[in-house]
Amino acid sequence: MKYPYLLFDADDTLFDFPRASARAFSIMCRMNDIPDTPDTLQLYHQINLELWAAFDRGEVSKDFVTLERFVRFFQALGLPRDPAKCNRDYLTALGEGVYPLPHAEEVCRELVRRGHRLYIITNAVASVQRSRLRGSVFADLITEAFISEDAGASKPDPAYYDYVRSRVPGLTAENSLVIGDSLATDIRGANNAGLPCCWYNPGQKPRPADLRIDYEIQDLRQLLDIV
Image 1 (tube, rainbow, N blue to C red):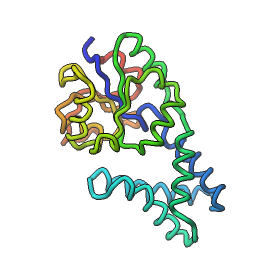
Image 2: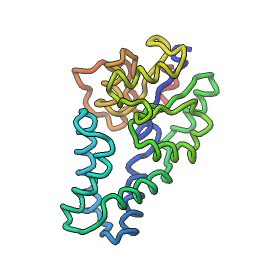
Image 3: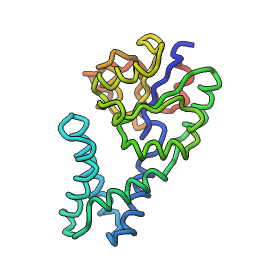
């Protein structure tokens, strides 16, 4: 076994985040009398992505992002709504939306059967991620989930991976593999921490020149031939 310790990103690697987010957005709209249209969803996503990109760059906090996205959203729409309540409604609904990506469950079950230990490494909101994991098919497959709020640092900060290492005795750069879709957090984070990485790239985005990518897959089943 080449990599007994496997460190998986959650959203867009194991979970279908866009599907869960769209569902949560619709529920939040219904609860707060907000037009639930493709245009309003696109506006929210644009604002949300810009703020999370700022978080990934270390410019703002996670708490700032989750509230500010709704502040800006309602400013853009000209709607007088309570951003804090809408954020709570959205996060609650998001925590209930569990949609595994294609082949994610079968691959994880096979990896566990082979003796690998699976971990989640995520920057997501802690309450949401814990709720989703508890209600998912991965609940009995994941050894532990390392959430940035608990770690006191976020991917791609090396301090986040120091926290992970401190919680997984025996994990080294030789026996572990980071698997994720995000170049900015998962792959750069693995580079910063000196860990080998596998880029999950189903959309076949161009390979960047400034990052070390040890493996690249378009289908999660390809991982079984690597580890």
